[in-house]
Amino acid sequence: MRIPTLLYLSLLLLLTMLGQAGAQFPRQCATVESLRSGMCCPDYFPVFGPGTDRCGVSTGRGRCVQVTVDSRPHGPQYIHDGRDDREQWPIRFFNQTCRCNGNFSGYNCGSCRPGWTGPTCSQQINIVRRNLLDLSAEERNRFVTVHPDIVIATRRREEIFGPDGNTPQFENISIYNYFVWSHYYSVRKTFLGVGQQSFGGVDFSHEGPAFVTWHRYHLLQLERDMQNMLQDPTFGLPYWNFATGQNTCDICSDDLMGARSNFDVSLISQNSIFSQWRVLCENVEDYETLGTICNS
Image (cartoon, rainbow, N blue to C red; front, side, top):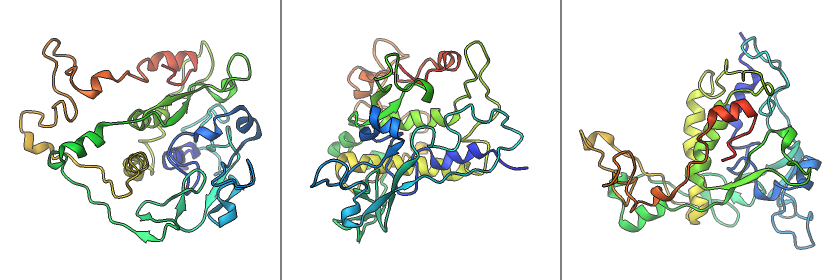
């Protein structure tokens, strides 16, 4: 039995092609011009003006190429061919993206593949993942501090330009929120139209051969995004040995994941940075009914 082509989204959701950067779409491509042209090949260092160094082509970092997708038919599990933006990702939005050479990576080939650093991405580095409880106060602060450097689409492709036809429907989010959102996007139901029940017969992240590698890659991309944010290629995601806490949560403190509020046991302490975060995707049933995509 052939696995639905859409299941391969699990491997490709965070990177639209081998060597691209983490985010649903780079901010530079969240424009009317890019969406209408289907080209997402941002410049790296355009000395001679916009469009003169797409994907770092002038220094051999990469080039703008036509996206090649899996054209094999879906299996019998998925019967709604052509109804979902995630099919043959990402050609509903972009059909040209950057393909990076060697150890170069990123949406414009401006960064390095994981494990490599330096001006030419030729210096190999080792990432050490430490116990979360062993981090210093400064290291803990770096781990929980985030910035809204990523954009996500909040409408399906047919509505991406907004009611006026000229306002791309994207929203800024944090790295952590994107980490959660990308998982939501990969498993969300297929919207079939107003008044119709959305199709949830296939889970595009958990019910196929990509399951194991997808989740590992998901964490690797979170680590990569945080390295970029911190401008520290040696940063490694810490791990939590949950067995050490026995019957208590030993990372539930205000300098880590948040202590319990003294005023409401269902909330975390107001002294925790996470108490100020808003929930990005809380109305999943509405999204499935209205066809919106986690639009807050």
